[in-house]
Length: 74
Image (cartoon, helix red, strand yellow):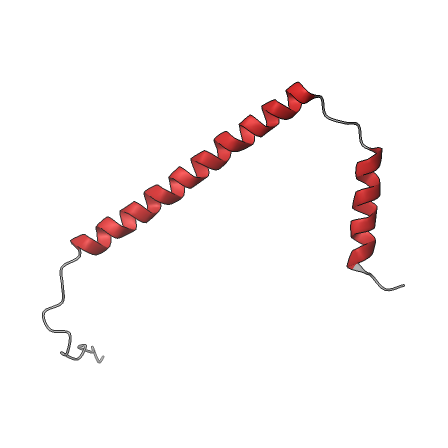
């Protein structure tokens, strides 16, 4: 028997129809918890991006961009 992704989707839909519904107050609490976590993740990404921007602006410019890189031979 070969595996078909459609079978997994059908099983998931069937299982969800048998599941107990979530009470509205619990659903609201879960939504609020998700939004707080998502907001925290976005703030973390923004902070990391800001650090990268500040680092790139603080980095000194190279003396001459046409100057070839020096190589160290051992």
